[in-house]
Image 1 (cartoon, rainbow, N blue to C red):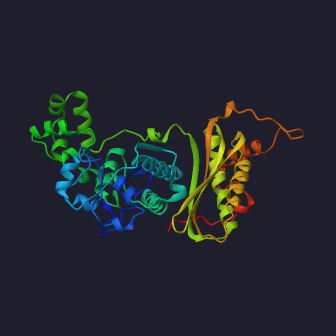
Image 2 (image 1 turned 180 degrees about the vertical axis):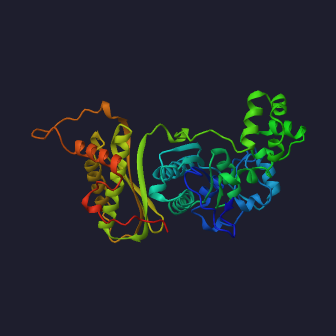
Length: 412
């Protein structure tokens, strides 16, 4: 087992050993509400309603006084009289969450969103592009910090249950890796309530049986657990205590994201740039990926949106709705370029750009009206041929000439 704070380097693991990541935002609601207010960085902050409400989130400075999510606000004020109470902005939370989940999906399509601020990822297919699971975890943390200004912690393991526990131990702002040969030594000293599936009532039952650690549970005969907890739960917890877990990551969005209402991507430059050609080249690179995802999902969209974030973190978006839905790379890029040029930027230093297509509908329902003299075979068919080549030979098999030799931006 290894973590970000260990003196030892993380144990070398592969995606075959540890294909699963659990990514959890650190004090998400409090972090989002204070990210643009640096003067609050070290102050105790509580996010929640009035005196009759409950705490939605607390900064780590407030947590040192015992403030936790879910406790009454009146108790939070007694525990930490100096805390600044901020009312939640749910629209902002949803917006940031959608952007964070898109960061995950740029790494792997196998993202299972559990809530606004946490998700499982299966990164077994990302190793060829991005390195081992620890490299992927660090890349995600860097991108979330750079693009959204908040921190996250990541658990890396061979099962989703252990990955979730590991992310909890990684907080705040760290990574904990649990290789398969260290699962029992990691799990068994933990409180039994840390196991997935052990809620307050089950925890009380286990404590009455004298079981306080995961190790206690693991070394209790399975029939004893099944008599006390029921056949299914007793068997399940016994397996979890030994690190046995057959659950897989099932790609799904959180309810707040909606059913694929848009597909987009953005990228942070390694260094802020004021060169419009660099920006346009990055918009083309993003458009190629977005259009391919549209075609893979068999959808098309009418509205193209670009996002531009400047060096001071000011962010603007511009949109244009096309006459017909499209999944054609050239048409989406043409619209994105027009939107960017329409901003009339003069040497403005840009940190990030993004492209998104919205107003999606099934591609089978889109009927394209041909223009007089236009060929009935064209860019759409060319895109499909590129998709087939990329699927067979990899992402760099076919790409626009202007992207040849492109250096991939790195989040700094």
